[in-house]
Image 1 (cartoon, rainbow, N blue to C red):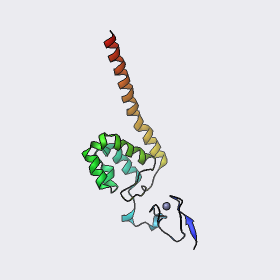
Image 2: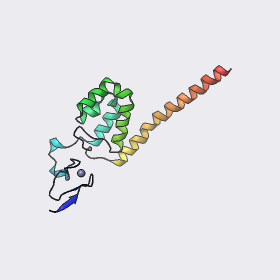
Image 3: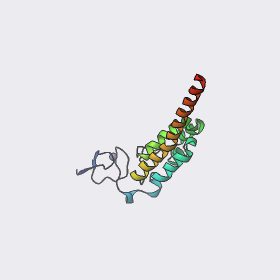
Image 4: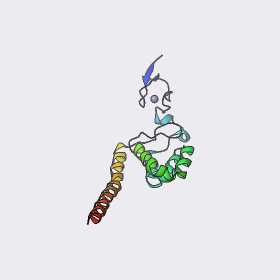
Length: 140
Ligand SMILES: [Zn+2]
């Protein structure tokens, strides 16, 4: 039997296979029935960034139980939603069926990840500055 390696996970699979039996990724785009394709990378990323605390990116990618959990916990106090956002940026995020998202773009992912750090850095600097001012006020 002729075999080939899955381009997604490297597993040895039948050369005729259209879908990897290990990671469940489809091997060629044209073989993927439209309704069976994972959701697209960019909308998922934007959902995670703007609406991640409501678990919208999880609902969108077919992971309803986690979506509901995030909705009820306000995105796991924001932290879980932000971790999901980072996973999406670096193509480590899996949909409800354990598949990577369609049309991943590393440039967009890394750029948006860096942009997302800006408010975080500003927040940390603000906290440090406030603490310094507060400490100075007490010492006086
Ligand atoms: Zn695979």
